[in-house]
Image (cartoon, rainbow, N blue to C red):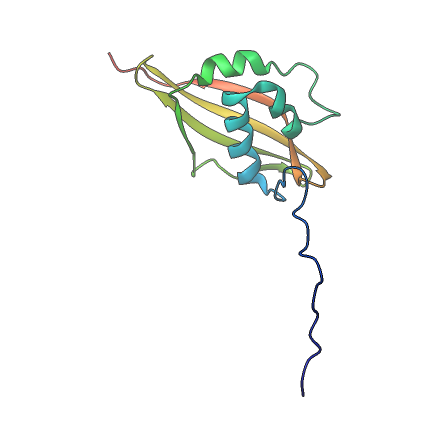
Length: 131
């Protein structure tokens, strides 16, 4: 059995704009931190519109800096408060500034076209410094 073939007279035009994939909870934390480092105004796309009233992205940008490295804390990465909220923990380190912290990103289930999770709070926890 032959399948019908479609031929196009003109090529299909490329899409206009930026395509953002549908993000899971790991993707939201990664893209959020990258957006805060580069431009805090663009990071508001990952923030809850309903719950985040006192989130200071400029202060968070100063903490992250330019040369900070971060990774998920696997032991505490998936703490689920309820079905509608969760916490992702990220360890950040900047050897130049002798900065070591754990950021707890509190998320609420607020689905939209970019993903189901939005950040409503960021808590900082100091780690031991190396002298």
